[in-house]
Image (cartoon, rainbow, N blue to C red; front, side, top):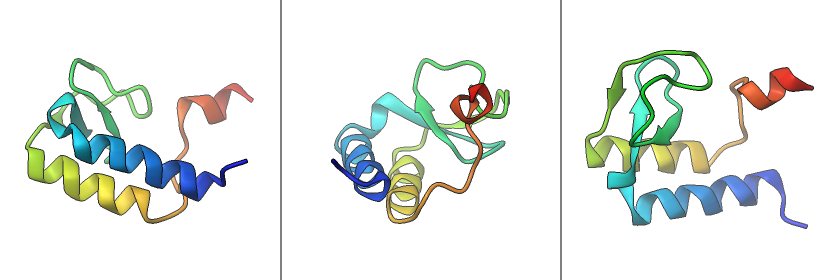
Length: 76
């Protein structure tokens, strides 16, 4: 079974391979799909879709443990 850190690194690599399909929420720095209008984590509506920013954020998030609370965490 993969560790959560390994899973995060794998997700980051998938984002880096196709950064134009993603955007970074300016409210909570989460990476979400390019078609998202409201962030599922913080309900923000301002996004940065610059490829360099998406890649930079994916590298940062993929290299550390999760620190933010997600909507899935609140369902438990």
